[in-house]
Length: 349
Image (cartoon, rainbow, N blue to C red; front, side, top):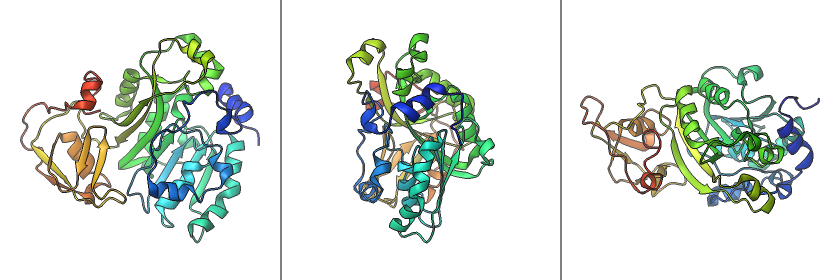
């Protein structure tokens, strides 16, 4: 079956020009984020043919997903799919969606062998070919997914609003959206947005950070959180000349499908205490880049943060004190991470 036509620059770049990660011209699609020892051990069991074709810019792999149904948008040949497959366990399920059949064929070829390596009685992985802007077309129902992840793919889409709408639609109430992608510090000129090489290198389609915030709010994600961010490495003189003064960064972002989140941080006097029970997080857990919960230590939180740790699958791992019966005004969500960004963004993002 031929690859779906329409997004020609992407299909051509990743279907013809790029065979492995070594063929990329820049370091933008290369993950420099630290990988935990537990995840490294799993990656060591994944076939090199899959690892060599990994183009992600981060590591958007959330904790506490055993038994969950996880969707990977733009999964390629399945590096993160198989990592997630081990983490969700035999009772869980991972669905990988990608535009390119040639990529999916590689993952499909390794599906049963990876299940055997993980000790699963059968594969818990399913690959589906389709557009991440239209998940209904590949049979994904409303409120059917626990966690949606994506790794340096959303920037490749021409209709990011549709992706965010679809993610919210398929997520269950309290479900998590965790993804890594490339962002720009300004809106890109038309010439850059049409440059096939810049598009393929995950630069030409990068969203301006404030337009991203607006798009997420429009889709119903009132409060997204930046988990980590780092400046993108270009490493190619010709491409560096083309992008000029634009600064690109790769960020990992977390959001939840919660209906009662507010568009600003509000203070209800609530306190959250992390129990230290999340797998591989015995001493603390970082919800985002300025909310690191130390095990056993009470932390004053805004109403949105309280909802994120009490109305999601993280709830068993936290003790929440207080409710929203008394309002104390705006919550001071200052701190080093926010100050460095000049106070940008909605809520605690």
